[in-house]
Image (tube, rainbow, N blue to C red; front, top):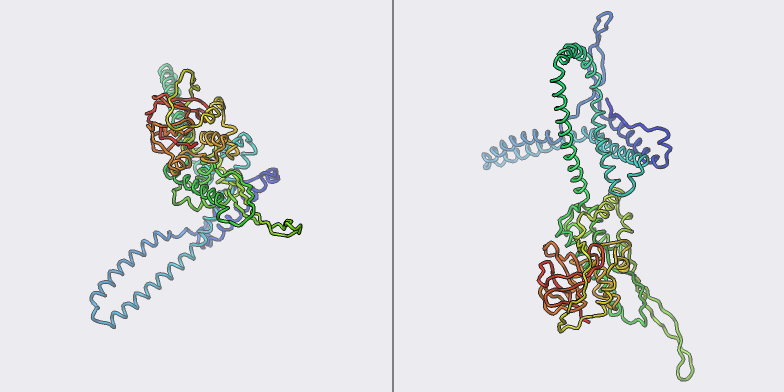
Length: 569
């Protein structure tokens, strides 16, 4: 049997610490694939051989590759047609035999025998096809091992591809395509010798005709020169168009491969579900002293509660690809259990006190230790993801799924911060918080969002407009509201506490939160802090406005103002 061409590795490559393991896996997979191919049964055929010297004819038995039987699907169609005809006959028999109990009983026995025979044939056929299925599975595993070995070899020879996850992902896709093309070329290599002999015979005829055509070209060389120039211009034009087309296809492929594959409403719903889990955890901690009463002291050691929505979306996209609110629930539980660990530990101390008579008495002093440990999703993703899933996770994190504003990512405004000189603010009946506003204004000019996102608990930069607002509230002594997502966390908090005003609300006050919906899809994309209003415009301090803290202003009826989070001071 002709076997597939196998990859060959040098002794130097086998001894390389980086390549040793993937090469060993590839060679083991090749051995298993060859063994599976050898297990495919062969049949003997009689072949006639003619001696070229004597002309004597002899025959001998040789092994010939046994062709794969037709698939179970095609065979099933043929047998199904037979059973269909038989079924019609049985139906007619039943219609004519209703009154004859004996005949009907015999007919049912006949149907049972036919059904049993069919199952036996199918079982035998499945057994005969097993070597072919094993061979196909072995070839698939071999292909995967070969691609991985070539990928590791490429990274060793081209270290520039290790610069970022996107480069590594693109390199691996390229190697897969090259391997598939090389495999197809290897499968057709057996026809090369036959094609070469035909080409050699044709070449002599072509040479003779070329000599005859040469003299004709020399006689009309000016015309052929003009035609050649035109031909080159056309080729250059076509090549440019082809290059542009290939570039556009390549860019489109990269964008498609790095974009979140799920629908935006489903992703926002899943983000809201995860935020709800975090809110329930916070509520459980807040109620510890009532749910676990009777202790003399409660000691808390709590990490921050919060997550980066893009880290969660990248994780789910790497595991589930396109996900919905329903399909993501199990993974949400898995991520939540890995991110948060709440433990309660009871400590009993034996203490003494002295009574009025000077006598000492012992008593139990009960302490409940409440500990919450929290990790970022990025820190435990390698523990839960396979290597291929981890590569995709890193790609989505680097590109933010090409949807940076999906979870309230800030403002794309690249303009300068506005000057409040000469603005006369009109105060409403609500007091507001002028100290908070002065704190927010003092942050104008910050670029990059540090320390706001790190204060919130993130290990690296995130879309930080909500972190900035939460930081300002936290610095003023407020533990709530605290949110990192505008639509999934911020808006629900204000609405659930009855502290929400829609666009056009007339009694906004300094320190209120202002939410924006840039694309008018009903979801908040950005948040800032209200400085005040002059009666026609509202003035704000916003974090992550073009990745900086800026003072901005908007018409009070600006359509992208979603509403206001009203603070009670």
